[in-house]
Image 1 (cartoon, rainbow, N blue to C red):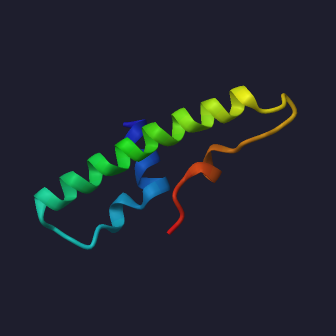
Image 2: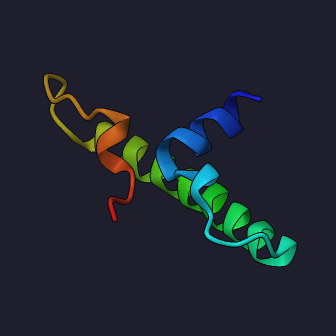
Length: 64
């Protein structure tokens, strides 16, 4: 449940301009994959960065 709340907040999942179930499903999978990749990239950057550096997860969200 928290995953979908996060996806809705970060990727505006409630703003899909279609009611076609196939398109909605594809967009949902794309959002999930994007979230997973972004989290992995953030983890790598945090691991390689100075300890004082702060990287808010919101900064890693694709901004249209």
